[in-house]
Length: 458
Ligand code: ADP
Ligand code: MG
Image 1 (cartoon, rainbow, N blue to C red):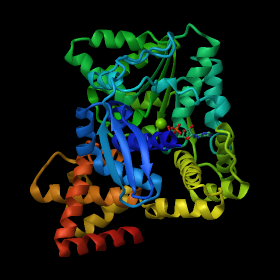
Image 2 (image 1 turned 120 degrees about the vertical axis):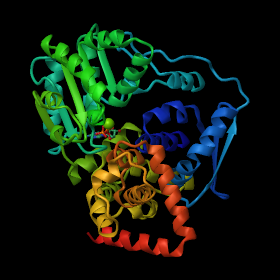
Image 3 (image 1 turned 60 degrees about the vertical axis):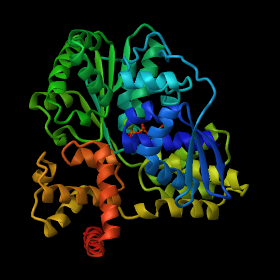
């Protein structure tokens, strides 16, 4: 049960802070114990270094998100360092035919610390057989299957487009698994754009750009996840452009996923933009109620858990659109029922979910925040996105980050990305600053509340 909650936390942390942070830090940590009576969560880190770093850098994230998962407000999070000897294995790839991306120094480090566990393309659960098909994803599913049956020939590239948590990564992996089964010798490479960028940067640093290019040009199938993050990265776009051309000309299949339509990816070179949509762009929409119920049922079956129909419908109607959140909601309900030895009922589900999602009830988008802010402050979106750090502008930028994080339900990373490609830690810092200031300065707190109400009404 604790493992389930920790996995769930890792998923959230990946959203909030990016997968590199998760791979480097959280994968090395385990959830040891939950003291419900005193509201204390015990974590264990493999050494003092990790322990201190995680505590000081991610203490708030841990407290907030684990609190949400355990359904308590502001639990105490205690991290201790383990005295046991840690296994010193560097994880190698699961299968010899799947080229695991070379890990950066940081990831390498964490792999050494972490218990052996494969991530990335190793997700065995992301298969066609575990994917629930409904009207919202039927096109993407059919296209993915067609590509898996006939790589390089039907839709090349295939561009899977849909909101966060709707199954894009799942389908990318499913294509990979299927092709690997059909053609065990095929060289398959799954990579998130984040990792692609990191790898490219280290290739530049160590003078291995040629090797880097060769590696990507020699694959039979390239699965690139979250391509929207290539926005504004000119050099990466340049190198990718050449890789794309080579693969395309040699009829090697390329599959992209993105939460942004090619037309709307900012700072994308025109020639690359057009190539992204050369093949088929398949949309994934938010699932219907029936599909959501089917996903819950399948997920419960898979874990050999029983979920009464009315509870499945309740959870399905409660979580609006994101399948990841749907799974998270199910896990929370099941965990809470097990931890408190209460039967899984609608009342219980209500109790667990109402609290954890109340702040997410009516979500607004980034643009509404910007619109409302512009009524109070004289800055344009361009200025907020710029590198200009003039004191007043920087202050308004922090307010924008705070409000966006608070009312849109988006991750730190998304907010940073929207505001000029800034890092998640910058956003986290801004949120902290504004919170403290609002507490200390009453007038400022009031102003903030007024703007927030204004945003919520917009
Ligand atoms: P995305 O990459 O679009 O953000 P993911 O592929 O990571 O989303 O999906 C989030 C979670 O929801 C994963 O655990 C995935 O297995 C699950 N999921 C999404 N869509 C479906 C579906 N149609 N059937 C079964 N599981 C799904
Ligand atoms: Mg994904």
